[in-house]
Image (cartoon, rainbow, N blue to C red):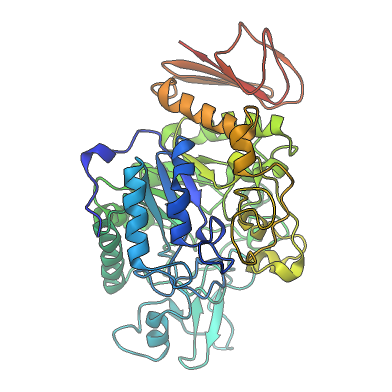
Length: 515
């Protein structure tokens, strides 16, 4: 077991966190599935990028009905991914490299395979109230009109208990009753277990889904302006409702403060806000009143990373430094195809959008290679949301295609058959980009080294928007981001830029002037 965090791993004010999706990072067994030992082998890649920490997506026992976010046991390692000894080795290696370790905590729900849920279904008095159960209406229908975030009804009938159970996501992810003191005690035990193994922080999955109005009132119909803000595509029925009763009402923020107490004052905690309506305001409240270090919403990636969306976040945030800035994840299509045109030019511009952001930055594995969203055949896809709206789903599975470490074969990801087909273009691999001075990878390394070593205090002093141009002022640096296609005039030559420039900033480019 690894020692608890020490003072030499104190968190910076605006950390860069590199997300690893374990199944798609590196396979050391030939199974075609990435594993913990594969992460150990390649952790230096995250360190070379200038990351302050790695965030590990779930590696727990799970039937993988929803990409591992359907957890059956929160205090164990999935046998396909390794052992607890492998996890301890990972933490030790990360700390040796100067990296902190964040792990996902999925506290909104479990898998239906979880022993807690099976005992709850069976009526075990200890576990009977561990989940959200409700009686049907007199006509046998669901307790209210709530919808899951994927679109279908949020209630599923269980014939054994003759009750409905609630689920924010799929029917295989029953929601925990987080107002139950016994459940809270379990969650505290889980967080302390991982802190004692050397974990430095936590990413809280779907933090806005943790609590709901216990009166179970129907959600009202969403007004058009609200519907446009609700997370997800507008063709998903979930966007038809204003989620005032099923997402963090009343005492929700107070509950989140428990997470700080359970994790410890020195842990870094970042929360995922899945409510599009009032998302940035919720991020601010969670960080200020809820005790989180940062929270992030889907506004920037879902908008296609526009100047308008960037400025909207800065306008609505109480403190931009409390917002998590990101463009890609395991849950979103790769941003270079959605927010960019797939070119290295756009990849470098978007890299600087993140590298100059006034808060925590989340990088998703592979974006530093300029990877675009791959097309997958339906037969290869396992993601429930992609399949539900095939072929018009969000493309979550495409973002999980394993990353290429080298050229040829299965790109040094595995000696077996990768769990998702890998059809990356020639030259996209880490091995090739490492030796190419003009590569996207080399640019990411340089950009985030500059953020760490030369930009200084990242507290935003001032900012402005002029059409497609965003200007940021920091105590030690000035940044100009040109989101538009047209060139713009600038004063002088930047100290660092996404493309060469002198007196004029090309479209889709960015520059940094150091003081």
